[in-house]
Image 1 (spheres, rainbow, N blue to C red):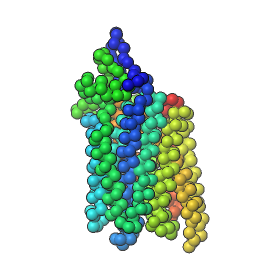
Image 2 (image 1 turned 90 degrees about the vertical axis):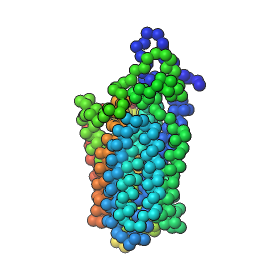
Image 3 (image 1 turned 45 degrees about the horizontal axis):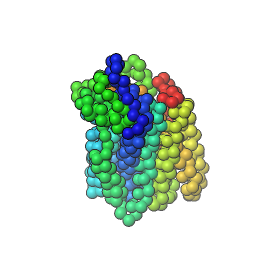
Image 4 (image 1 turned 90 degrees about the horizontal axis):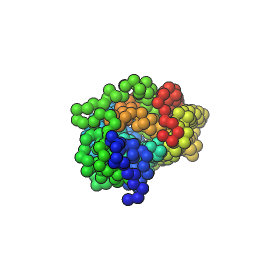
Length: 455
């Protein structure tokens, strides 16, 4: 291995593995870990969007209105909320690796099982189970990216990883378009859930445990040394220093989130997450139904998800690069403001279409692409905040708690989205999204703990 950073073995009181990884090179092995987590995030996005893609076909086959699916979407998001919080705590107590593998397999199997439901009640139960697994993945993946990546590349790497959630939504839209006509909604659930199961097996073989978690949990020295060496760090024989208390089975780091140094940032971050995820889930859950309400065929409704997700990928990756270059405050405020403006523009356009006329699909898709850039970029910026704010021993819990607060907003989106569509049509729907992003903008402006340039 080249570019190995070696620890001094003289009079140093101890070796801080985290600090050495922060100063070290970004090795091919660390990039492989990022690629694996990004792939896992693809499956998260794929499974998470399966219901939204299936709803138009389920409405047709079961003879139900879109309002009948609001409770189903909401209970799935309740599962996501529980999964995000519990998954974060489990990751801090028992390890990021096993929590990620188990959650990926869990939601993949639960998504596939939805292909055999015969009524809304069965679908509701499985969406709740599905949501728990989906919610548990994100905080552990974010913690692993932070802990495997040198400080100067961390914001960029985290945003790349988070962008692949949007990539998963894009993949789901493409697959949905291919399978919905020949195989119906059953084919959507089987295909998208099967991807999650396959990726969980790949993670089982290739995904390592975080060396930082190994240190703070008191793992054996030989295991820590091997994990650090794969990251380009040779710790030698000096004693190890763990920052913060051990992440042992008796430790519950929830109180850390309200320590004086981070308490106000935690509150504002949670509110920003609430409204940002309300906006994002309102889009991803109801865009197919919104396009159907504008008169577009079922085979075209998945295109809205695809263009929204393409914008999300671009916005997510660009967010990380811009934060590293300019710091977080300016970048995230511009993303929030841009999302508000683009949502209002699309709401104005759809509201101006004459009654009985059909909106221009190319205009709608182009504006959805732009909204995706800003709204998903904002969400990635918030996840980057949450992974930077908290100490090592509480990182998964901090990200999970913030995500859980956001999932409550996502739950609200199940009812707010269908209400906005029913009461105000597509125009009212985009006004809801714009208002939610505007509140997120204000909360971001109030967060004191920002990421500086080249963090």
